[in-house]
Amino acid sequence: MKKNLLLFLALLFSMPCLFAQYNWQTLPNAPKSWRNDDIYFLNSQVGWAIHAYYVYPPLVPNQFGQIYKTTDGGNTWLLLKDSSKTFYRCVGFSDSLTGWVGNLADTEKISGVRVTSDTIPLYQTTNGGKTFTPVNFPNPSPKGICGISVASDSVIYAYGRYFGPPILAKTTDKGKTWKTYDMSVYASVGLIDGWFWNKDTGFITGQDGANAVILRTNDGGTTWQTMYHATRNDSDHVWKIFFPSRDTGYGSLECLAYSQTKRYFVKTTDGGKTWTEFSFPINSYDEEGIGFINDTIGWIGGDECGYNYITYDGGKNWTPDIGFGIATPPYVVCYSSSGSAINRFRKINDTLMYASGNTVYKLSGTITGIQEMQNKKSSISNYPNPFSRQTTISYTLPKPYRALTLDIFDNIGNKVFSKYFMSQGVGQHSFIFNLKLQPGVYIYTLTTDNDKITNKMEVVK
Image (cartoon, rainbow, N blue to C red; front, side):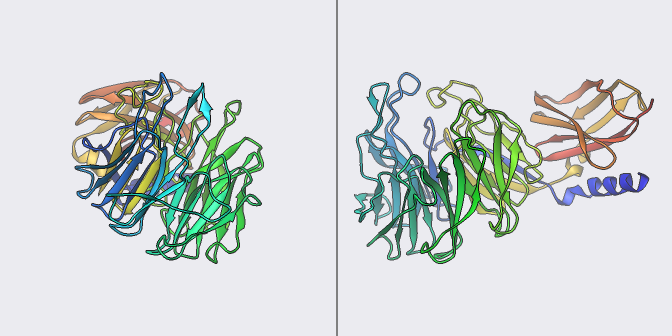
């Protein structure tokens, strides 16, 4: 027992070299929408953002579908195209001039209102977005496009829709000609997202029957293997797929059956050969966007009426990250002050990411650790200590923080308690802990903006 405690303490106090502080910045001049469905960046400076034409009264007033471009890392944005009939869903560029924008082309009527009248599934530009022309597909032709993967400067995959038909399109000559494939034998309902390492090797996601699927090709789409097929019949699909490294990848599972409250996500640690389901701790959460800055630190977002969530340990634990959201109607359907509708994360390098939701967000990272709060005279302690049933945990903050999490671990590292606090200011704060624990030594940590302060307590009979 003592050996386990010493090992856990050694690991815990060696954490400073493992933690980084990541802050999401709301780009003030970026396009604002109920949801910016997609973004694509060639590099840290040049990128595009798109959102759809929504006509869901009265939640979302008539909102034009728009395409924007930035050349200065999101500081300023130029409106390239404005449409009152196109449901722009996805975007991808192979260079600064050549790119594609997918249209959901959802022509069904909702409450008597037609969502869109534009039936062109994909548009192409060869002049950086000044003009867009329709792409002509052979049969079987997709009815709409949900996702685009730029596998090389000339090989591009497009796929969709999430509600069908499940058609994969591919070009090997930068959009001059296309081939299409009916993927219904693998994903009978539809295709949604993809991730390609090169022109031959990659993944696409979707839904087969009532279950989520992930498919893989190693030969440029000639053949496909089903690498993950859910069996819960929950009417869920893999909405987004993201690889922070070649071996480690994640997928968000959006569930369309509202009667099913339990939510899941999937993870691979062997390059996508096998995928494991994990429970997401928030029931009925509408998982959409997923993104990781490294193998262990990442985010899930998407619920228009809730928080986005962050994990520091590869998905074992999730806590709210309130660094997103402009929270101004009509940009959130439920008019919640916490909605941000994150649908896409794009990683540029190990310290820079972009995300699209109500607007566009930019993430920057700097190395920090446990000492940062300690050096600024943060402190945490509890009294009485030892205690049998109740103790007061007190902590001092050197500056205001948006969110804090108090975690308590037993002597072998199992988390036995977790408490989330909203915004707290400078000064001393306290929390009365009265949960009955087994006698022994426990470690408690206060985490805020990726910094930690730590102490230990002892429970006696």
